[in-house]
Length: 63
Image: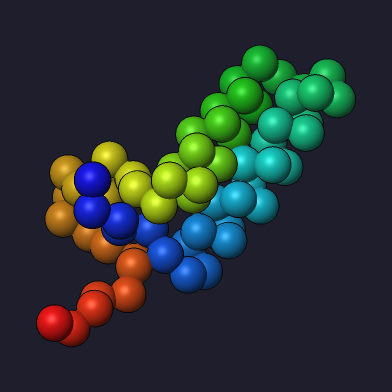
């Protein structure tokens, strides 16, 4: 898996994921557990959807 999540995208995913999970813990709707997905993709730096659409927010390293 080539990293395709980077920088600000990663930070936003972490914040959104934690916020949704916290909401679920505090009695929010069941669908708020979807926050696990952005949190997981931020932690592993890989988003399968980005691969399908050919998109990346990670920095390109020159060889």
